[in-house]
Image 1 (tube, rainbow, N blue to C red):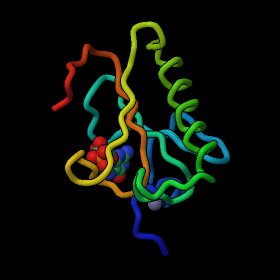
Image 2 (cartoon, protein in one colour; image 1 turned 90 degrees about the horizontal axis):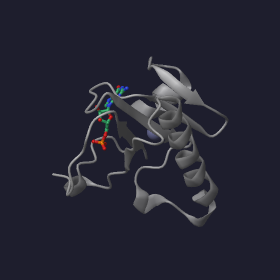
Image 3 (tube, helix red, strand yellow; image 1 turned 180 degrees about the horizontal axis):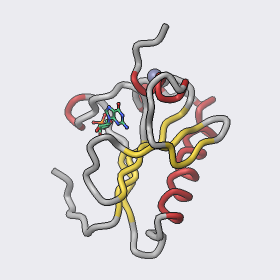
Image 4 (tube, rainbow, N blue to C red; image 1 turned 90 degrees about the vertical axis):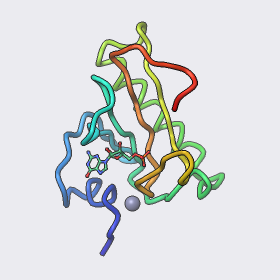
Length: 114
Ligand code: 5GP
Ligand code: ZN
């Protein structure tokens, strides 16, 4: 039995507001949104961090970005713009160790990030 919270969401064991899903990836709204649009795109397969990606995951990562593109497009943000972020390990602020791509938009953003 998995203890990973995002595996549980992918398996339907805990609820989430899903905005996109296919056979390989899932996108759902962040519980603690940092922007009007804040969606997390995850692979169904458990991968802890970017460091754990292998060449066989190449297409899967591409699928995550295509899902992000679709979610942002459906939110009307394709032209206005949006940000995708994937944190890796503690100094980057990763708190859930199941790969996830943040899709943030609907407000102006600063650079560099904090
Ligand atoms: P990280 O800090 O690892 O890059 O991002 C983890 C994100 O997952 C955070 O933005 C946090 O709000 C979100 N999160 C943590 N637990 C849950 C949950 O159970 N459901 C949802 N929808 N989001 C979660
Ligand atoms: Zn997991």
